[in-house]
Image (cartoon, rainbow, N blue to C red):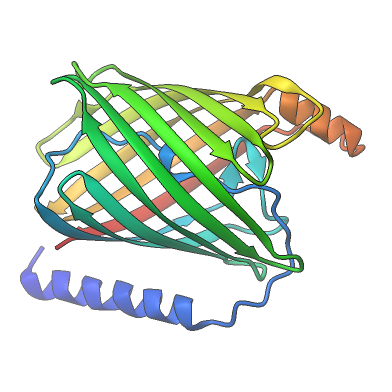
Amino acid sequence: MTTSSINSITRTLCTLGLLFLSQTSSANESLSQTESLSSVTLQTQPIEPWAVNLDLGWDSKYISQGRNNLSQGGIYWLNASVQYGNLTTYALVGRGDSQAYTEWNIGLEYRLNLTDSLEANLGYQRIEGYSSNRCQDNEFFTELAYTATPWLVPSVSYVYSTEAAGYLIEASLHSYWNITEQFTLTPYITQGFDFKYRTEAHNGQNNLQFGLEAAYQLLPNMSVSGHISHSIAQGDIEQEAAANGDLASQDQTYVGIHFSMTF
């Protein structure tokens, strides 16, 4: 890929991001809870003293904690983060592609290297969602990952919601495989447990999700990635749906694509 082609792609994506953010923020869908960034386990990367990251993406559905949060279509995401040493601050905005919904996640995260193969992340984020009803939340999260071997990375994450006065626990396994120097495939599986985070009526198994992620390094500071994921509804989701009179399957399948740059 030539330098002029890369510059053209970059200008196009930046323009799309600006157009996306410039739209009005009227909305017509209410969410009870939204997804924390900590729910996504990333392969360990070297810590740079200073870095700015931009990520533009799209998911075919807005799935969090095994639930489809939007009644129509998917969602665009634009994330900007600044990393200084072990501390990362970020602002993430999402907009529905088929209905009026806007969400902001603003937070900070601190990374702790406990040992050569054990790391932890601690963080806080403020969530603001705009639809027919406005929703907001404060979340505190932590994650522990064992990274001794890239082909099997177990992790566990914990998210506490002040709005719901409940918490969510997710246990995950990721397996990173370098197919070539630029191309990586990552199958994963995650088991979620809900304790009054999304519902008050049931505590315990929430959903089992598995999928395949793929990433291609276009340049040292530029990459494109995608995923296909499937979530199987369990007790918490099924009981919530039954209480609402919804007897249809609550399983979810969705895909996504992201373009990332680091400066």
